[in-house]
Length: 297
Image (cartoon, rainbow, N blue to C red):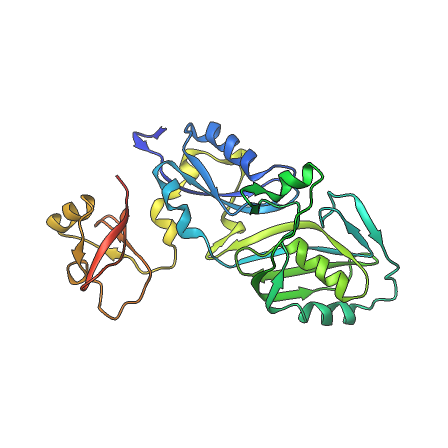
């Protein structure tokens, strides 16, 4: 789609509504933006709300550079009830009388679940096992063994209960963490069970939901430039025409021509033109050179 004569390409920060899958948001966004080339980075559960980052047009090729970023969530841990999906959407699978559990005990148990921990992915998730997504297997009544995955929990804060047995939580964690599983582990650590409700994603790396737009307000003018994928990172600015031409043609170049120091250990370098528009992403190569990992053409 063209907006004012310019092809729409970049990223969009959307505040995902509840009861929409991430795929639903992408499908709706294609209509709002007038292009089939829309993808997302980092799936959110249908019942969750909050920040979903979309790639639009040529910038869908950049979504991989957003993987691996830490994320921050809020939600509520409901003690005393476990469910089949580990959240409020599932069927009840167990109940416990946990009225005697104190806020101090809940906070201490949450602290014990910080740092590097092993986590078993829930059956109702998008993770693949032997080429099949777990939620597809679960829908067919099949449960398979899942290998634990190591994740980093930088923050697991618990507030005072908002109602009996329901505690607000804030979690900052590595990519790939399942907050539902974390709350399930919290219930187990307290001698019973628990499930998650009202999950909301507030932050992905340097991106905050405060800067996101409601899905119904998404429009071409709300799409950010592709260079925003590298928000907060140093940019390699190329000013001379010959080097610009060589970058646009995807040539391997000496690092000094790009102005990249030999002591720079970055895994990749976003290269921009004099106007600040992203034209390529370069990565380390042999013998003091850099090669294009991706050229936006």
